Image (cartoon, rainbow, N blue to C red; front, side):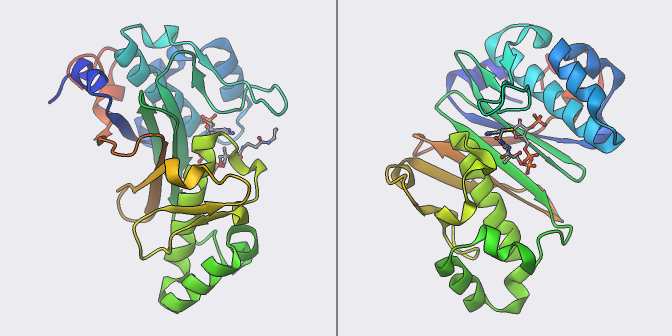
Length: 249
Ligand SMILES: CC(C)(COP(=O)(O)OP(=O)(O)OC[C@H]1O[C@@H](n2cnc3c(N)ncnc32)[C@H](O)[C@@H]1OP(=O)(O)O)[C@@H](O)C(=O)NCCC(=O)NCCS
């Protein structure tokens, strides 16, 4: 398997997949005080596990790229909106990164080429017709209708992951209306077509459909990286034991 150093040099975008069940007690040792305090506040074990796995993968993967110990990677999670430590994770000097979790899956994307956003969603039926007004513009509603009833559930999930990946790449998150962000129809390759008030972005944004496996949809968005080399890998072996990430992940 390709060594981590090589990955860093060729400016690939790394996409690491992990599962909630990959969580191990030693992962907690990788967290800084702020992350530990956030972890402790999760009441549901599933949320705590997903958060812990996301931080562990972030620190292990970024640490390998930067050549520093995972617990020393300087991750800042300050929310620009309120100052609380639940914002987009930022590593000064890069790589840029994005984290998403849903159901049993956790995904972390790292890029040295520019901003990145990733979103994974479990097909749990949560996105029903009620979400349409919050999610889709009128042209997207028409595109979805053209695809027929069989597409409704999968189509909404596809739209959702495409749009969330975009607003995570810019760092806006759900502070902006998703109806302003127009993306291609679910049966077409993913593309940002327009964004009200952000005319420069469609030309700068590259979207890719990811392959999380059955029961999930996922999308990756990259800014100013028109021809990205994207490598999807399992983080699970590297999460098993301390030191196993470095031993040829
Ligand atoms: C970012 C956001 C779209 C994620 O939605 P989600 O589907 O619930 O969750 P996901 O699992 O896909 O992503 C969560 C991750 O997004 C990241 N994130 C948080 N804010 C982000 C932002 N503005 N931009 C990009 N990524 C962000 C974090 O890494 C978070 O993971 P963490 O739990 O490890 O910290 C949503 O939580 C959001 O918009 N948050 C910001 C809201 C805000 O700014 N409010 C005003 C100030 S309080």
